[in-house]
Image 1: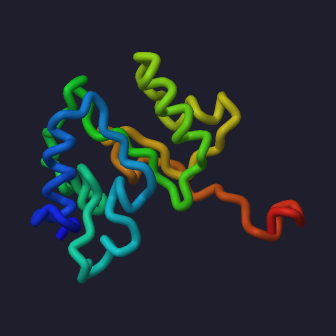
Image 2 (image 1 turned 90 degrees about the vertical axis):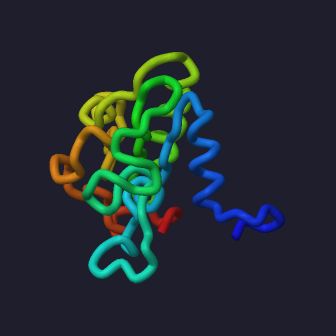
Image 3 (image 1 turned 90 degrees about the horizontal axis):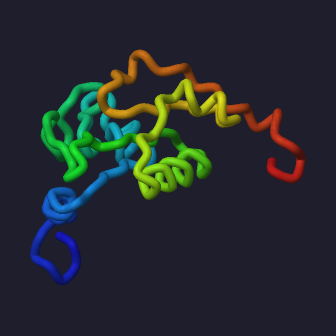
Length: 139
């Protein structure tokens, strides 16, 4: 239960999403349910519009925001702040966010950028640098 409301957080997400011009799922957990959605999924974790790799999470597969778009998934763990910032700036400017291939041209190297219409199986593999390759100040 969400404190003081008598309703679950899932209830509130559904009600608020119905009034939203855009819905952005930030992070792999919000987009797909994350690691806990894998395997037996004892926690019943789901993403906003995906249950793991399958359409149909908290919101139905055919759900659309007031702008007519499905949930925009900015996946990753952690999500690159540049992906989130640029996505929100583009939405605010009335532009459609790019597919993951366009992010590379902008200098970003996404792990799993997608819009829900793109299956996760078509996304690039994890290309995050390993800690050994970070500068000493970031390690």
